[in-house]
Each structure stands twice: as C-alpha cells, then as structure tokens.
Image (cartoon, rainbow, N blue to C red; front, top):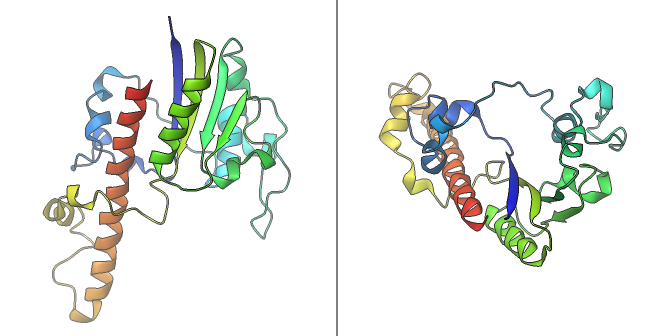
Length: 219
C-alpha cells in the first residue's frame, strides 16, 4: 500500500484571514470542510524571516540556537548546518522538498536532510509546484514518501486571478473601522488602496486553497 505524508507551508498566510479561525468570509472553502476533523495547534512563529523560521521548523531549535540569522544588511549570517530533527523521525520515508521560495534554494543548505529538493524557479504560482509534484511522483520508486510543499502565492505581489470570489460588500463590513465611508475626499485614494490590498490578498488565499485541493487529489 502507498503511504504518503504531506507537509504544506503557505508563505505569508495570516491566521486572522482564515474562515476556520473566525474570519467571516470563507476564504478557504476546501480546507474549511476538513477543519472540524483535524487537530489544531496554536503556535507562534519564532521569527518574521523565512530562513530563521524554517530552520526552527525543521530543527526544533530557536533562532539563537541554530544561528540562522541575518545581519544589518538583511543577509544570511551563516548557512544552515543543523540536522533536521523533524525529518529524522521519518527515516524510512523518501523525503522530497518542492519549493519556489528563494531562501530554500539548495545553495543555502536549507532545508537539510531531504533526499530530493526540487526548486521551482520559474514562478511563484502553486500550479508550477503541483506540476512538479506530479512529475516527481511519477518517477518515484518507493511507496513511503514525505513531501514538503512551500507555496508562495499569498506572498506579495498578490495574485488577482480569484478576485471575483471576494465578497466586496462583506469585506467593507468586516473592515468598516478603517474603510469608513465618511473618509474625506482627499483620503479616497488611501481608502481604495486599502480595499485593493485586501481584495488581492484574499484572492491569493482563495487561489492557494484551490491549489491545495488539487495537491491532495494528486496524492
């Protein structure tokens, strides 16, 4: 029998914009269907910077312990050189990382202890990740696989493909505190800028929810 484990990371995804965590608009129609049947964990990110966060995820160490930090210019102080404790638990699995995040490029040695790292450099679109996943599955010879997928669709620049799914009237009601209809005319541009940013951000969440649905159908 085939036994696959999939770990999904969605870059820049806000908990407070997810329907199953209380956001009034259902931005995740696929994931919301399974939320009540899942275990939920409340966790706090150890950093705002991808290399430090991912190093902590895989090593179970804090940033000051694994030392994957950035200098004043925002550059990586040192490469990741710690065993991935989380992955060592799956020693009998063939471990594959598929990502389009530049900080997870093999040149940075992060993440460590994967058997394969597929870096999708042509696009931040989840469709390219899913196609790479499909191609990888076709060539695998083992039945026990662990896949780590890192989606970038919710990161800027936001995608507009699913913007028609965003309920504008509901959006205005949800955020009426700072999208106030009584703003002065001189502030209308600022008001629309906030609306536009919310629309495209939510559109990106709808999109990645769609891609995750496709991912699970592949597996």
